[in-house]
Image (tube, rainbow, N blue to C red; front, side, top):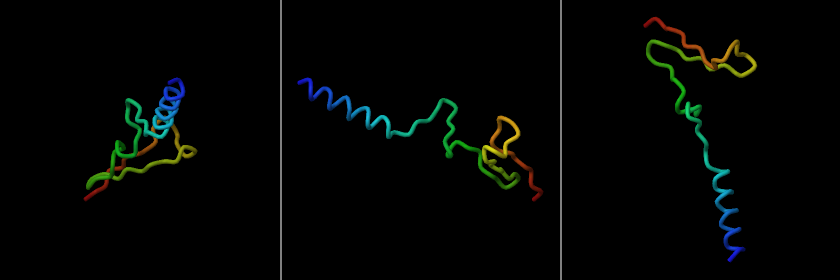
Length: 62
């Protein structure tokens, strides 16, 4: 009985470690703002950032 409990616990921990985690602010790529018809979104690498923002949105003339 104890072995089954430990095996189930280990399986649950393994599956939880493999599951994608999304923080409350959703830092996933799907949540990032995308470029549109009137704006271009530039994503900066961590070593090129000047502040806490990781992207810059530039207005484009149509």
